[in-house]
Length: 277
Image (cartoon, rainbow, N blue to C red):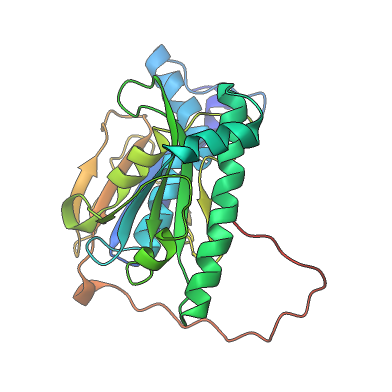
């Protein structure tokens, strides 16, 4: 092993979500000007993927969903644009160009969220939600009529969804994978969103919290990730020596570690208005 290879440091990062679903990733950090361990092209591609893992929208959204929502209790909402609503969207975009319609629907989604949050506050509740604006078919990735997918607080979803004015609304119980894992929901949502440089692919309300990842050095790049003794494995990526790896697992409520309560802060007195999605 040469000097450059020795400078590549491997780490393990773990995220624990409120619903017991956890993710653990083993990945290398490659300093600038250093090439990864010599080997197959597949191995080098694995390193490049791992380096940008923190920017993966599916990864980030799955953590956000698992930490703030629960299957059955909360709702999956689809807002469509049809009938007179389609004519109004075209009028507001000033054209039927696909890009302009997408931008116009983004503005409509922001306005909808403002109306929905006001309605929920008026009813004594605080809406938790995350949404994507979509114009792709998630299976074929072909263009589709613009629409909005959302995950919302179950107790307020019907009230909030009623503020949509451009078409029909579909509200369903939020469904999950094994052990309540919402990773599949995150993948479904992101697969329908176009990638646009510098643009966020999903939009959460500010009252959502993403779990903090805990990073430790890996003992060896060849050692496969282990599932904790108190957990059940949900999914594991490949275990080839020297390759990046990911596992997802579930910890039941009675075996989860209690997290320290956050200290209560004072009232924010900042100047100006803060806009939210």
